[in-house]
Every structure is written in structure tokens, then in C-alpha cells.
Length: 133
Image (cartoon, rainbow, N blue to C red; front, top):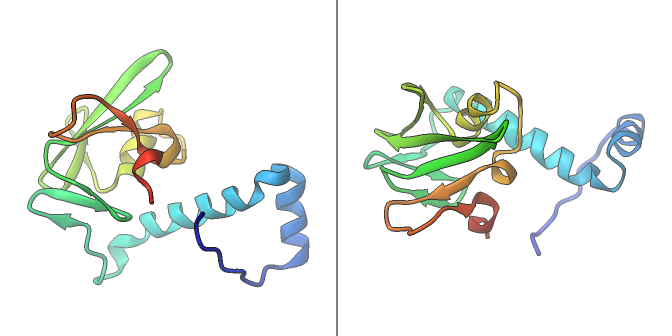
């Protein structure tokens, strides 16, 4: 089980979250914070995600040549990692989340839940969430 930390949150905001997401409200909070951190990563010089053309996603090392895929309207959409960026339809994306959103019609999604990963050393795709510790 992951460690959790409790942070102050306005009561009315929490009640709106619980009303909308029921018992899944902690997941919604995590997803929004992760999305925010990924979208604002370029604004911080200490964000290091690239190494030898690969990418470090959270604590998961993705070497160059890694493929990401997601199913969208019954078709597999695939992005490939090269030079530290994820290429989907010849357009580079700076993170798996941004690539996932593009592959899913530019809708904000939880990349950990929607993507499958196949690194060059893998035989088949695996759900991204399986790579998380």
C-alpha cells in the first residue's frame, strides 16, 4: 500500500468532490495533482526526466524505443519514445500523459490507467499501472 499524507482542504471543496466522485475522491485528487505537476514540469529547472534518449516517468525508467499504446474508438493508438519525447503521428509530446491525451482525442485522462507500455526488452505490452511501485 502506498504511503499517504493528509493535507488541509476546504470542507466545502471536499464535500463537492465526495458528492461527485463518491468513494473514489482520493483517486480524483491524486489524478489532478499528477496532471498539474506534469503540465508545469517545464517551468522547473530541477525536473529531470530524460536520460540517453529515454524518459523517467515517476520512478519507471523507459528507454528509447519504448512504445505506449491506448485503445481509442476500437483502434490502437501508439506513440514511440525517441530523443526523450513521445512521438504520436509524428508530433512530439514531452510526457506520457500528454501523449496519452493526444492519442485519446485531446481529452484529459489518467495515463497510468489508460496506457500500456512495451519497452524494447519486453515481448508484449503491459498495463502502465503495473509498473508503479
